[in-house]
Image (cartoon, rainbow, N blue to C red; front, side, top):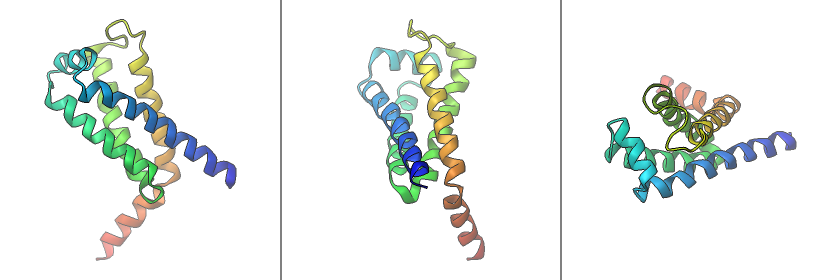
Length: 132
């Protein structure tokens, strides 16, 4: 059980670090982020909005009682990122070697594992609201 707990904290921290480091680029209107969101037609509101959602997801992930909700939120935002990489941006963006795409995949997969592991948090909320 302790090994499982350590693994889940490692997954949370990996996702949190990746999401938090992107906030510097998004909130700082760095050229890479502006290029990405201009290309997909969502600059500046998409850049700022996704940054806010990723910040909320990170906070929820790191609170044990809300891990599943943070994981679901981060999966949702990464689904959008992966979609745009595959349809409009390409895997490689501004000569990054595909790193942004692979980071999005990493966040998505780690979050999926966390969502599955903590699904009882979501089920408890659904069941509680279903009986009310």
